[in-house]
Amino acid sequence: MPNASDVVNSPVARRAALAVAALALLAYPWGAPNSYLRYAGVLVVMYAVLATSWNLVGGFTGYVSLGHAAFFGLGAYGTGLLIIDLGMNHLVALGLSAVGVAAFAVVVGLAAVRARGASFVIVSIALVAMMALIAQDARELTGGSSGLRVPAISPDLDRTSNHVLFYYLFAALLFLALGTWWFIDRSRFGAGLKAIREDEDKAEALGVPTTAYKVAILALSAVFTGVAGGLYGMWFGNLDPIFVFSIIVGANMVLMALLGGVRHLFGPVLGALIVAPAGEYFLTRFGETQLHIVLSGFLLAVVVLFMPDGIIPAVQSLLRRFGPASSSIREETQQQIRDRHEVTT
Amino acid sequence: MVSGGLLAQGLALGILSGGLYALLASGLTLYFGVMRIVMVAHPAFLFLAAYTTYFLHRVTGVDPLVTVVVTVPLFFVLGIGVQRLLVSRLAPENLAMMSVLLTFALALLIEGGLGVVATGSYRSITVEYATSALRAFGVALPIDKLIGFGIAAATFVLIFLILRVTRFGTALRATIQHPTAATLVGIDTIKVRGIGFGIGLATAAIGGAVLAIVDPFFPAAHWDYIGKLMAIIVVGGLGSVQGAALAALLLGAIEGVVQVTGGATWAGLIFYGFLFATLMLRPQGFFGGRLAERF
Image 1 (cartoon, chains in turn green, cyan):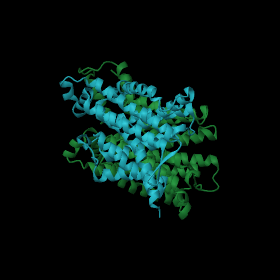
Image 2: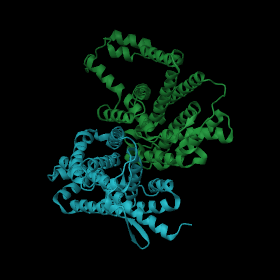
Image 3: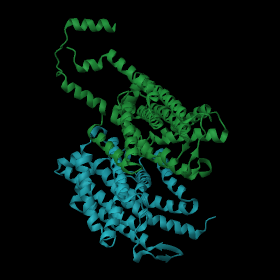
Image 4: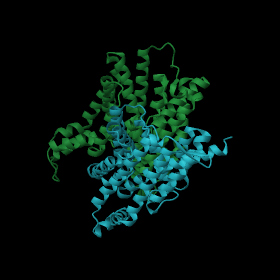
């Protein structure tokens, strides 16, 4: 008998829902009534990219990195400095700094993956704290705490078209990141990564090249994060080491991914759609107070304690509870099974 | 070139702050021992204690060091609460990662809470009897830092004695070594774990009183301590209280010397340098016990 969860899980309904969501995403800048909402839209899509990139490591391997802001900041400063100091084209600078971030991630990865479990998290925290110290100290290079001005992509771009342009650039990056996750999820590489998540020693014993896999996925995740950082620099036009290398940004990526559900393709996006607007609303409602740190901490604690698998599995199990009880007895008639096979084949 | 006198001064100050690091690192070792978790919120609790000391001192006028009679029991109970109500609820199969996230969330809550209540500006306590400095061998030793070091060292010795001499210490060490076996010989490991956590937070309470008199503090500064303490426990190798203390004094001394020769940024970076070098060369740490092989 068809029930609510069948409707949710049926391929046609899923594809229709996806198409509607994608259309809504693409149409947003045209429907947004004012510049602030367009700005907030760019921010939300950027966080969706960041959370999805983070989930390449966190979701597949189970390694939690709190220091992804290091890659974000490195991409941002790399891109900005290549544009300013070497007068490079924006896109070339973005590509070069992505390569640089990848190389950096490989080096860091080789040190970090020697550490399992908690020490990996510690290394990731240390990484972002270290980068923040360096970025604030190297004044002649980064401008220190007064910030670094990144020239706009084109001088005759007004504020609205700047927001719209970067909204679509971030959206394109989001599709690319989601596509990469989807592809890895179904690949041999992805199976190896998930084996690492479930039991690293057994995975190694079965011949999964664990070190190479972990370093590769960390580098891939870092590239997406770094490109998002570079785009952020060009869009926002000003880089502040306190924000760019902030551990709070890294923690937000983790929070969004965990909240949505790290084992689901759209989990991090869903988390970003909830956390980022909530954060912005909080900022406009209460101003720049420390309350938003309290809110982030509270949400993170609640998710870790009560919903470690995220919203998507929680809702699914809720739907299952309201649906008919599952039993070992097949409740489909032979006719229904035949019909289903005719649809799929 | 930096003169020898300045180097000696830096070294002396570095060792003095190493005392506080050693006390804090012993708390981290305890948490790790009883629960196999890394408590990222330890420095945040340190700052919570420093602010509690500050406000108790401002309101009642009692000596900041006397406030430990209030903060230590308070933090001890708080520690038992954190272990019983929060940490023990986490699923065991992914405890290492989730506990870091949970304690990270606690750190955010404390940092944000302190920011809301006490604002983000610097605070400090000056006590009249500790404004001068002792001179020995051409090195100035500020009295407040000496007192701080003395308190940290005394607390450290006390914890060490509790672990080694008392019956509870034996039970705690048994729980650390092999929880299942400890349960089998009749140790109430649930209770022991809670108390172990309580003692860990009590070190943060004492550390907070010390911090309040030796250094100015503000809520977000706990991040610096996280990096430093994590480097110390990785270099020391988790497992033994002595290993952590040795690493704390060593890195504190190096920090002090680098502070006078290379400046504050390099002094901060030294810790991360040691952290990465240790992970590359000897991931189990340099002074660690048997627990240190993997965490």
